[in-house]
Image (cartoon, rainbow, N blue to C red; front, top):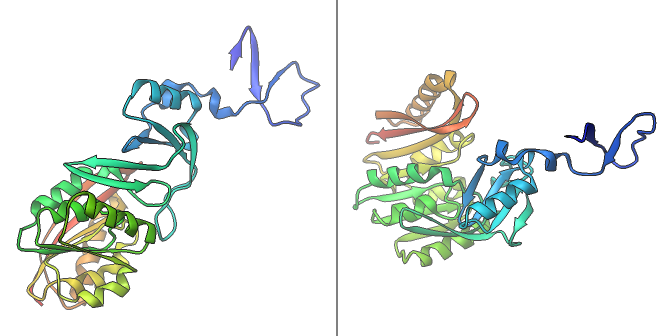
Length: 289
């Protein structure tokens, strides 16, 4: 940082700088980042903004609180999504000291604690699309339900939704959201999809598999819950563009190895996930058993 013809370099306490003509400032390097460079690198869940820790500064947080009146809390993520519960490590930056909020999308309200459950606001359009494909006579299985964004939207359209979720805190909020949205046709199940699927063998005409990176491991359970007469699977993954064709072939082959047929398959990029990597969905029509 240049000021008054001097160069100010942030250093850790205890560093010997005596041989150099320096002015020592014990400040966090992140606080020196110009806010305009990073102001758009965040996501909003309810009234909570979550920044990438490497791009987050108090300046950016204060700017968000000043310019967006819908944001009341600013947090920073210090890790990627990880673990069975798909959580990020979050730290408080500015605003109100809380992590619970209510997020709204397409007429649904979703209460959650963003530090204890997984939720992506970037899939709102995709959730709306899938609900639009469903028929009122269907039973749907949401294999990795979280706080219920797919479940709630589908429940407003179909006869029944069976929701699996391994995180007990997420199930707590899922049940809260069922009540909050005046939904009465959801069976909320706490447990791993591998354990839950045999209890609902052949129950569904539509299955949602929103577990990027790991969905393939549960494809057998998804087929187990699908009606013997056939139905639809929405299979999500994250892949680089050069693996799209391989992924489609691999999923088709796995379904056939389980004794089912693929009558139709539509491939779609949902969103950019990282440089040259995409969140994708395969809408698969599975034939009769």
